[in-house]
Image (cartoon, rainbow, N blue to C red; front, side, top):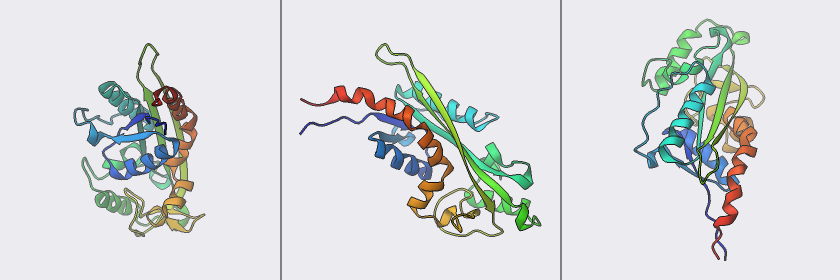
Amino acid sequence: MALVKRPVVVVATRNRGKLREMRAFLDELGLEARGLDAFPEVPEVEEDGATFAANALKKARTVAAATGLPALADDSGLEVDALGGRPGVYSARFAGPGASDEANNAKLLAAMAGVPPGRRTARYRAVVALVVPPADGRPGWEETREATCEGEVLTAPRGTGGFGYDPLFYVPELGKTFAELTPEERQAVSHRFRALRALRPALERLLAPAAGDRDP
């Protein structure tokens, strides 16, 4: 039987939750996802951009240059209306550099103390960036896509799944927090999956050379 070598995409994260979500999507397309743990030589990237797009592109460009392989990165976070859009790009370090999910959630709850239910609206926002380095005389290229998921911040965590602010982020249309969603429900509403679906045509371009990799 003829075999097809799957194109490799380096997912620019060491976050297991993000890698699991992005690998599930790439597997469906026939792409092989490898996280940064497989590339210890890749340097840490300081996420110092003013926007999600700037951070996602910086990570993807750095990883693509270091590995010579297509790199897929995302930057995402929680935007709370009552906090003027915070924590935004600082979501992962809201409680300080290296903060745990628990510490970030505790700070969010403290910041939201006294905010009534009707004013606890928020959204998850994600930007995904694909950077393909030059190869075999072909120029490199890059694409970005953005998506959101609207919800509310609860007054106490619910659910044991997910990561980050998921136990506090409630999706009214489903009546559940992100930490309570099944994998199928999560794929349907996730900001990250929505951005990935928008990026799908660009990712499918990576499959075109695969036809030439068939074994005789």
